[in-house]
Image (cartoon, rainbow over all chains, first blue to last red; front, side, top):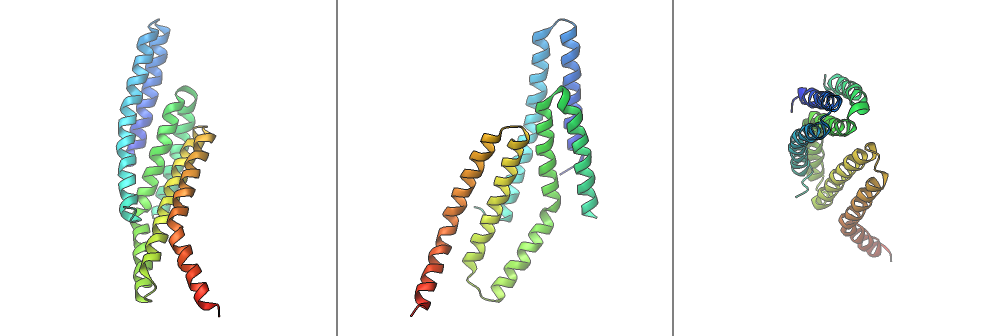
Length: 65
Length: 128
């Protein structure tokens, strides 16, 4: 489990929000929402893996089979 | 020391979440989930050490081991339910948090019933 995962996700978040505002200002509304969606899906993929790892750890640790 | 790592991580994550909250609130929730998971993974080995020590103690005192297993299950379930309900409470979904806690309480109650029955049998046996 690496600490820099938080910074990776924060980076993606900031990048997505900047892309969103840039695209919005340049008049391409739909692309803005598309990039935000893609950013969220990427980060969600990472988070889902992490949470499933957490659940397996808890299951093994607390013998919750 | 682990504790400084955890504290540093928490503060950095809080700052990042504040930054992200204005522009993209959904990422703030995701960062808080990831921070929770990372902090738990940091303390995992210590928790395992504590549980092993207690279980070896309880088996040495030949207390009935199955109750200890249920106790550990209940503690684990309580932790996970707390984790999930706090995450949804952070995101502002109070009602979902309550639902998660309700489900957790019911399932913990189901686990605790055998212990209650055993206790009652014990008491009945003691009474003249």
